[in-house]
Image 1 (cartoon, rainbow, N blue to C red):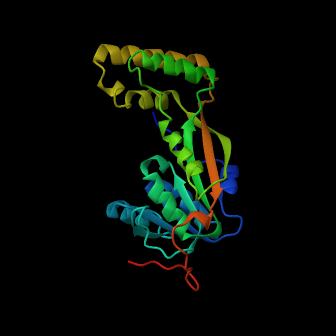
Image 2 (image 1 turned 30 degrees about the vertical axis):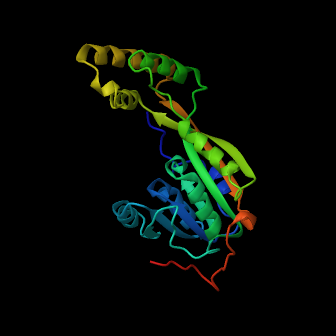
Image 3 (image 1 turned 60 degrees about the vertical axis):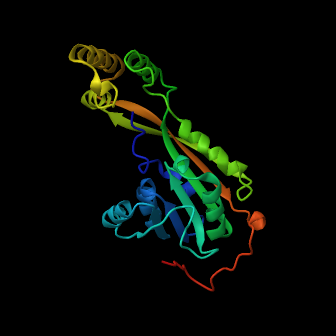
Length: 252
């Protein structure tokens, strides 16, 4: 099941995550591109990195205002203390934690900050819980997940980011009856159901929608936009930092 559009989150979340003063932002991975582009619109200079050259090129085409380079997060081609803010959206669990956090600390200026964002479904709404119950009759693992959030614990465990702040913001995403049926039928395991089971499942989901929506308004899928930020601590770095004299330095 989709976690929605991780870039289209509430303005309050962006305000909480964004640098207090526009500066040099390093965005990690293609999932961070949309949010990085929003930070660009706030006056920041933004560099996006992706370990896949094809993904880097795709992001450059879609967001021409971003500076883009192919690089891995544990071997950044950046000078020490050349970045004011590091941003990771929907991807912290994909990074090797210790070397990546060490690299983030190295490239951040004193007082610089790491921000991490995940948009996850909020199952506290009753009709969402009923939908999960229906889907798990056909796929016991449907609408589970959230394990990727445990990756954030690596930040607090790192000596480079000893104090981690956390905030959550609510996001509501409209979904039509047809959209919900499409969402369910396109889920990988549910898409493989035989004709009779698939028809029965869609009938149950359609009935749930009809009983929960207030026509003509669509249902609203609830999401939690979960944000973390942490200021860098350079005291645990193994070697002395030598900041560049000025500007952003990229060694290719």
